[in-house]
Image 1: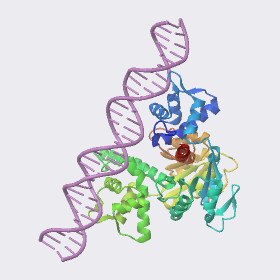
Image 2: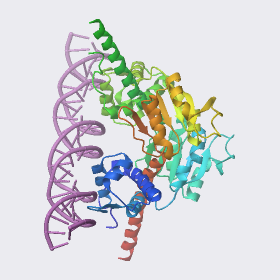
Image 3: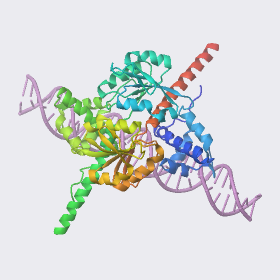
Image 4: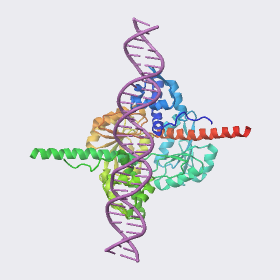
Length: 229
Length: 229
DNA sequence: CGGAGCTTGTGATACCGGTCACAAAGTCGG
DNA sequence: CCGACTTTGTGACCGGTATCACAAGCTCCG
């Protein structure tokens, strides 16, 4: 039985590892700190200290009691666990406002995600160059995925096109997709799809904001009632 | 005791309401469908039918057994519950690549989020105009928030500035913040902060992608072992 | 008007994730 | 070398969420 992960890492933990990673990078590059306690890391990452310890324990017992965690070693372990020891070639489909911004977004390349190709179907943009990359026609997708070894696809199209683009990506062999289009994309279970939905986030904020105002209004009403009593 | 929500709506449900909303809009505008079953809505939203029913039951019992839900009525109820019967004035802080894209993003205005003001500190961009709006200096924030009744703030600055911008927004009275900067922003508990972290999403994808490849490599190793046996 | 056929609404149950609390294991000073 | 102190690692517990299963309720047809 080949290399097996010591313990299956819970999804919730995986989602927090990047946050720890960033905090650790700040510590290492900024202050050159050598060790860090779960308490300190927790405060940097904005979570509970016990959660930090439990999360890190899934990677193995890399801490030293009474001391804390070795920053460099922890950095390495998290990087390795997240598969960030290598660069990942990324393709972006759809170069509207959002696609363009993503293509030029520095945060991606800094973290080892290399934008290798851009695609669209609009003849007005196909052939133009964005952030130093030519925009190719969506029909060239499969070829490009094979040639460039694309492993991650980003959907930044209008919602109506999202499902089809997703299928094309999957068909071309892409197994990891980040979907920015406000639409549900259903693909076979061996393809991981994550959704980032900007409007949804605002709508959730709206819910809480509305509740605040409703409560304020109710309190105001009560106050007035009280005055007349 | 003034108007109280019939039952407290779980957060997980709130996060799904916008998805239902979008699916229902597709149904109504596209095919002009009058009623919808939980089964159908579930498939459109990419979730389980029982979950749909439970979620909708928190809004009240708006379905008809044997028939389904009235599309229009459900649309109205969800819209109301999410506080989307009114427009929300939004301010964006930071007009780099991302901020600019967000400022021009149609999806926001379509859903009733009105971008009212843009802020930055870079003298090269302050005073310029983006998507028809003047970019103002961050120092004018408080004034603008009061004047325009800004209730939602969007942070699209570099990570180093995020915390301070968050504090300024909170100080100006903004209670709902959407943070795109890859940094933790800690604010008083009466301020709702939601985080959208593009790199984190890719890093999570990287984790799964890496696992796929690790498994493939292990299988390959086993195959070779088998061949020599 | 009665029974077959749908579809909702919701109790029951299982599961996952977060928090607490504490023993285990280390450091450090004297 | 010992005892005080720090910090990890983890078992136990708890609350929220997902899923199942089914009774209740509605429509429609004969």
